[in-house]
Amino acid sequence: MIDPSDSEVRAGALYVVATPIGNLGDLAPRAQAVLASVDRIAAEDTRSSGVLLSHFGIRTPLVALHEHNEDRVAEALIQAVRDGSSLALISDAGTPLISDPGYALVRAARAAGVPVYALPGPCAAIAALSVSGLATDSFMFAGFLPAKSAARRAKLATLANEPRTAILYESAHRIGESLADLVAVLGGARRVCLARELSKRFEESITLPAAELLAWQQADGNRSRGEFVLVVEGAPAAEDSVDAERVLRLLLAELPASRAARLTAEITGCARKPLYALALKLSDAGVQGAPENGDNSAST
Ligand code: SAM
Image 1: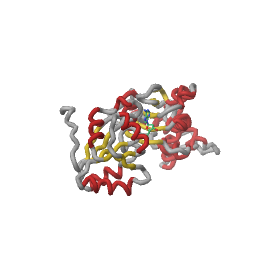
Image 2: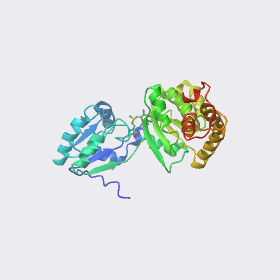
Image 3: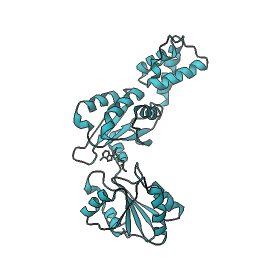
């Protein structure tokens, strides 16, 4: 640990600064000192960052850096830093670059040999993970789910066999649909943490099997308000998957692929869709399955 007063800003450097995700008290003293001392601050939305900064009496000039101008503006900003100025990067909330702009700027800084310093702080993904009660030894961040259901289900299907805990961001107007799709694709047994309004007045977080979580979320309209993180338990360990495959193989000897997959899903709690895909693969490889009689519901 170093002395917290050591927050002197270096010329010719870029500072990536995390800002609060809901509680102004979470802007660290060192972040305040750096934001007050740099020559310029690149911000996703200069108006909302202006409100944050003026709350702390910070009057550093702001320059807009958002997804629509980032590629163009990044080079010019980094050139100024190379010429000796100091620059901080913030986003509307939380850690820049985490589902937020900044990648082009940091990439350009690295390419130009400009030193990049982290001022760590709030990040909704990590905050939700830390309170979820789900495994934290190995996790992945999957960002936002797509807005359209078909694309959303396809992305959720990539988690069917993902052994790591997965973290997803979601907005208020899609949380219900996304949870319903999650149950449809991953099954109702997978534990999921819903974390809402972290660090804000109506903060709540709850971890339940997905089907129960969907019912809980739908039971109260307030549970569709605010900002959300979903933390999804990893797929069952390999030995459980072997069990599911064993059940599937046994059923496949007697039943068509779709019915074998559906029953295996019911017996094991594993998702039906990947089981159906596996059933088709096994059938192709010669594992016996009774002929389909037009029933292909497991593929939907
Ligand atoms: N860069 C931010 C971070 O470090 O978390 C994330 C920015 S992303 C554009 C905004 C999304 O983050 C929201 O839609 C929500 O999914 C999540 N989020 C941000 N603040 C949150 C909060 N206080 N509680 C729950 N989720 C939050």
